[in-house]
Amino acid sequence: MARPVIHDASLRAELLTATADLVDREGPARVTLRDVATAAGTSTTAVYSLFGGKSQLLTAVVDDGFRSFRDSQAAAAPDGLRALGLAYRTWALEHQALYRLMFGGALAAYVDCRPSPDAAADAMKPLMEAVAAAQSAGVFLVAPVEAAATAIWGQVHGLVGLELAQVGSPGTDWEAVYESALDAVARGWRA
Image 1 (cartoon, rainbow, N blue to C red):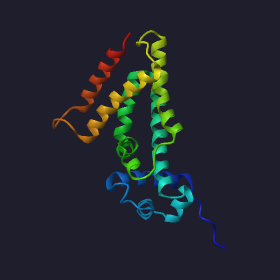
Image 2 (image 1 turned 90 degrees about the horizontal axis):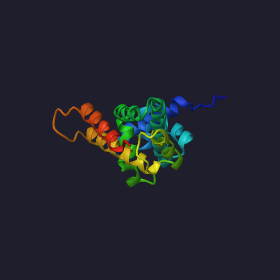
Image 3 (image 1 turned 90 degrees about the vertical axis):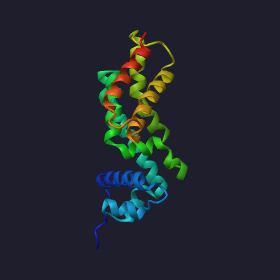
């Protein structure tokens, strides 16, 4: 009797990474489950067994990205808002394909694929908690926490997006630009 094939967390992670890379390179419409399975060194049966189909696989990729992003933010949170900003850029540069999938809209245009509401909301919690703490300490202007956190997120997100798209002069020192922007954001919200 044949042993049942076990599809473990390691294979799941490999499939998520392979999917993010392939979709980033080829676009979601051109990537097949066979392509994903081949890139991960497995069969399409494993993909169906773990995810159910392409739409569920793409949603899992985005949700996993938001969880990874949240974890990096949570690790940086004890060191304050600037550390959160630096961790944002670091994570995006280390996970470029995933970042583009999470925030680029390519998947939503192709298939009903949006992050699960909890995954996306959880990713923002460390920033919201840091803003609330800064407001409570009298360091930040008092404003609705979610509005302030979203405004800050939008500013750092915009810069990271420009850097990943390589929009700007050749030789732009993106790290210096980003750190200057973090300083400006802090000054703008200072009480």
